[in-house]
Length: 120
Image (cartoon, rainbow, N blue to C red; front, side, top):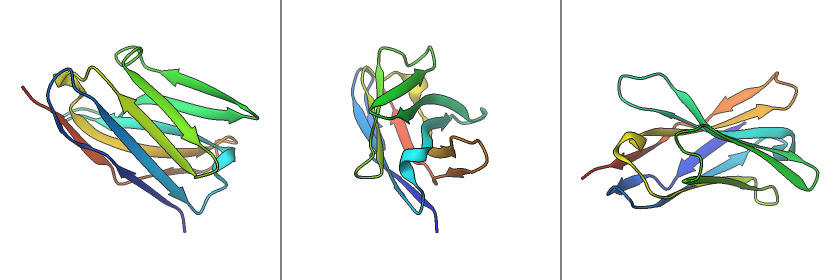
């Protein structure tokens, strides 16, 4: 049974930081592109960042609104992915979801999400 479990969400003021974690089980973690998505109230779910392992190298991708503020990482030994979020803004408020997509593109799994609220 595949499980993706997010944690680390919470309340933070603008300029603050949070670190999200995603624990994966039931998949061959190394063979999956891992991604963080977010969905703000009234908006569609959107990609935030993704990370793919290619041997000892990780290929990362960020969307423009978070580049330079967020850092995605993964620990293949622990089947875990992280998102360090710094300099948070009001517009970063959303439910953040963990996604695992097999590099073949055939399988894709979602976590249930963790809420990040940036308030002033």
